[in-house]
Length: 437
Image (cartoon, rainbow, N blue to C red; front, top):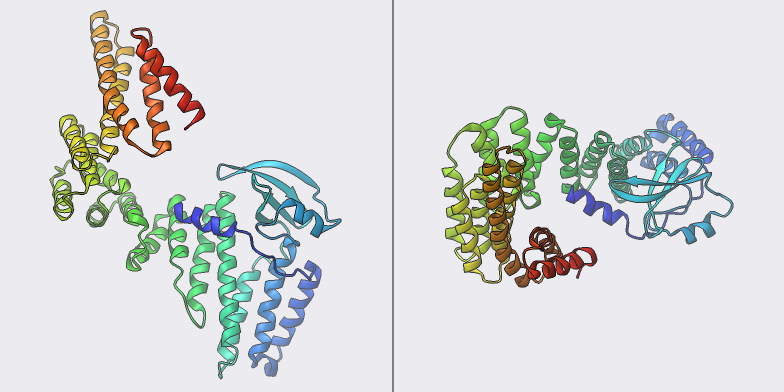
């Protein structure tokens, strides 16, 4: 998802609009005229004829979008669009973010919280397959261009088509049509590679796989992720984790294990890979010795890397090895006294233990057993305070401080009537949680 959002951010940057000179009706006439010329054998032998058709299709693709452009603000568009007013306006949510949707005759404009045009949705296209037809025409121009005189124009045209496919993929993603998004990203990938000067669009390859994976079309997603690995486009190890998940869903357990172990060797801190390996060992019943061997190799290569010991602690924690987890977390802080995550790990371990004990107590009807569980619950909460407070004082990241404050606020609330210091702590951490730092 990160790659998609990063690419989307690029699309949302302010950019000048191409001059919009054709109405949809005029654009359609231009396509029909250009297509008629390609039916003439003499004209069809000329690359310029096909370039004219390709450009006509591109104009037809853009015509229903109006005069707006991504990044334009409402004030600018009010001036530029003149009497072309929206028929309705409503607030909508896309991908968890609020937008203002303006409906026009042939398109919908979506404005973000900054009143900038973020998405254009065509509702009445001139041709449903305008981009596909434009690509075909550009490639036909290259085919008949024996002298290569129009190579530069063809190359630019094909790559422009590819960029439009990416935009369509982004739009489909935002509108929740992930199947269509995957198809558009795949088209963008293929278009980029079909240009006279081909380019491998690694982001399109990844996004095609990612969106297919999200709709559980694993057979389609698999080759995209495999190609990402071939291109060394691994998203900090996420590609290994996604491919392993695909193998798991396809009942290829050994393939899943192999790709996870390979990914772990390269990215031992990737949580998706770690969780995938742990789940594999738990489900298979195998002992996770190999996982710790791989981690030991990583520690030998980087003995002063505190995060590797944090990862070791996290693995032990997820496997239910409490003492080993705490020892590894402490080791991470010992290696780097400024590394707060080991302390946070200990705090969360005790806090989660307390939650489990609380749940057990809630279901216990024997008074003596209930009180014993409550006593253990409170002891676990107390054990969480010291590592959390040390981590809070140590970290320089205000967001992390606020996250830790959430835990400490809840703990202090539990003990606020036992000691004034907890009432004071509750007030302190509540303020931080509510107002930030």
